[in-house]
Length: 76
Image (cartoon, rainbow, N blue to C red; front, side, top):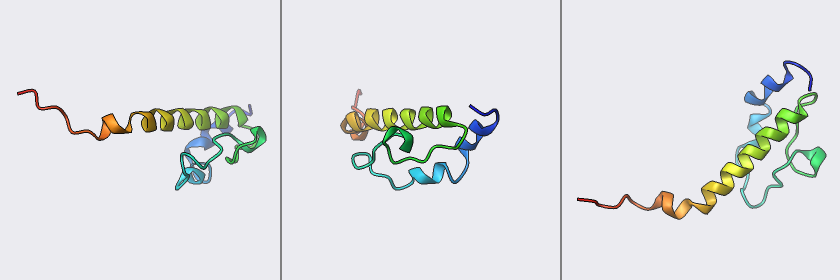
């Protein structure tokens, strides 16, 4: 990976491409791996790591949505 290019993962246009994407309808991988996300040239490893982390986080959220949305139990 080219030094310094990984820092671009926190700036547009990289982060903008995640806005409005469907959890179910998006191929959560960089395009070179058959996905729909444009990697940053020279920072493919960082791009893959971000996409992987987002995919995993969204899957955890989706699996736990019911518990997250449930009001807290009244323990009084």
